[in-house]
Length: 113
Length: 116
Image 1 (tube, chains in turn blue, cyan):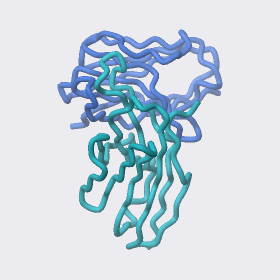
Image 2: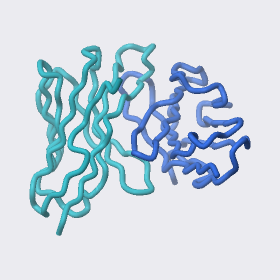
Image 3: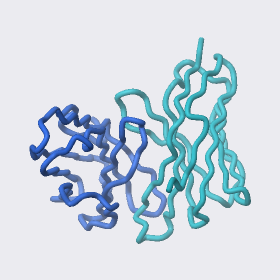
Image 4: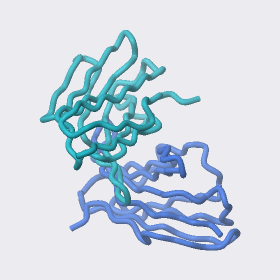
C-alpha cells in the first residue's frame, strides 16, 4: 500500500535517449511535485502541479516535460538525455499548497552511460 | 545562491548523546520550516516542522529551536539511537503565498551516524 510510488526504481540508459518516469499517489492529494537529488544529496524542486495545473517550473531545461493526466499521476519525460541528468528523481505529493506536508516516493535512480 | 544553509555536513554521535543540526535562511518571506529524514534508498520523510510564531517545538526525542531575529533554526535529537542514523534535511517554504506553490527550499543535508 505504497502512498507515493515511482517506476522504474532504476533506469540505466545511453546519452541521447528519451525516457519517462511515472509517479502515482493513492493519498487523494491534489498537488504533486518532482525533485532532483544530485550526487551530493542536494535536493531541488523541478516542477509542481496543483489540480493538474503547472504551478512551479524551476528553470528546468525544456528537455524535461512533466505531464499530469489526473490528480493522482505525475509523469516526467526526459528527451535527449545528458550525462548531467544522472541523479535520483523524487516524486512527492501534498494536499493543497499552504505549507502542507509533502510525502515522497522512494525515488528513481537515473544513470546515463 | 543557496537560500538555506545547513551545518554540519556530517555528524558522529554516541548512542544516548545529543545530535544538533543548524540551519540559516535568508528570505524573510519563509513561513514554514520542516525537517526531513532520509534513509539510504528511500525518499525524505517529514520528521517535524515549525512556523515562525513559536520558538520551539518538541515531538518525542526531536526538538526544533527557532530564532526569527537571527534567521536560524536547529534540530536537536535527544538520546540519539543507532536507528536515527540517516541524512537530515532542513527546508523552508513560503506556503501562504499560493504562487509559491508550497515549494520547499532544502538545506544541503547532514549525514548523522549514531555509534552504538
